[in-house]
Image 1: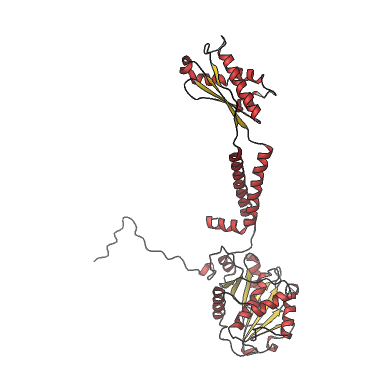
Image 2 (image 1 turned 30 degrees about the vertical axis):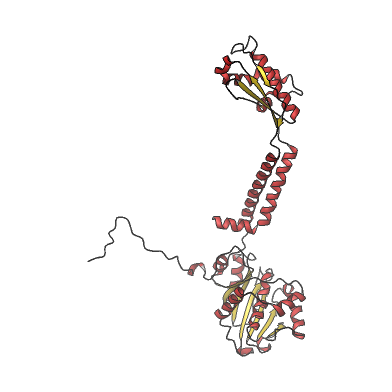
Length: 425
């Protein structure tokens, strides 16, 4: 998967990625609440000039087991030696000053631990048993002010949680995308059955008869999609349709029942053709899946009995067992045919001269499209093109040519090193 496809996948599943990122952000805040950052306090110890040559050695002595164990006896509650070693650090500020820093869950704990280690160190190096000889030092500054990462640490934890959550969401999105066999890109849909995409338009999604009635009465595509639909009609040689019944042009927009968005392609195409001045008849043939067209059929029956609006060039009807020649005379008849996705059958649908397949992006697999195409071909219906409903906004392909006929990229000739290209006689 290339980077562009990765970005397309993340954008397509942006809700999942965003939810995971927010969950990571909340997890970062929860982590800080359950395990707040440690506070730090520092005590300064000054040593005599004679010990300046061995200041690094003195820093090692200050973190030795003997010093830490003695300091541990002075704090309450005592800590395990391994934890104590993690919380105490000693650095040389100058050639004769050591900074003994300690971390604690509270300011008092950090200050007490730093002062205890400083006192234990001075007691140890001033004793005759000191491995570096007797060193008499003193506390230059007791640990009194504890510091913490505060807001900076909280912001850092939140940012880390947000990024980790986003990465986890992207991984989940990639996993879902790999498991999802549905086709989203125009080229993928065209390549699945070797048929070009004629037009890609956004569709309305009516859920009741009133919504379908509004679509039939007032559908108006924008300039870009209107031009796309006009080119599709011209490609199918339907824009010059004249006459009616047997002499008129007939077109079937074939869809599957599970693809509810693609169902609007036929009505929108018919409404657009009527707006061009073509006398158009829209026929709804529910075929194998009458439930998917129930609300559309209700709207068509109501519209046919009481036509209104500016669609004076369009008639709508519902086909039962009637022959298409018995339909009202029109220059163009658009039949909306619906088949079952698992076992498509086209033998019961009205016969037309041209058939196109309507499918929405991300609604069907290559196997489902191939099954519909095979059934249609067996019934003597050759699919002449594909109409895409609601194309993926990240899709920059055209689907104009199937893969096996898509023109190869033009390459300029290159010169082979070491070959004489002189063509003079």
